[in-house]
View 1 (spheres, one colour):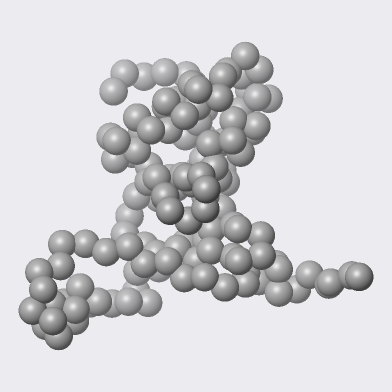
View 2 (cartoon, one colour; view 1 turned 60 degrees about the vertical axis):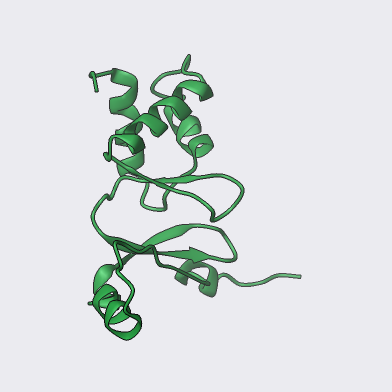
Length: 129
């Protein structure tokens, strides 16, 4: 994939955002660096980066995809209150593929695990009525 300043800035914004932003959120953050960038350009570059394995595209969590600069094996935690996505180390499910294979006889070639719950920030927010 050829170098592009737009793609470089998209990766920069993605790496600076630990909560796995959507394309719209990345687009909003990019506007201060590239005021003339289009949302279509952001989507096109994110999809290309994901196809090339440089980022992860996290789908089926909500109505829109989220993006993750961390391409190493890990899991996700999705807050059911604010919809932010956090990384969970793979160590929480050490040897899960081997365990599944040995218990079922199935040949596991990969897995995706996501946890749902309430993040620390939302747990500490005071509810006002």
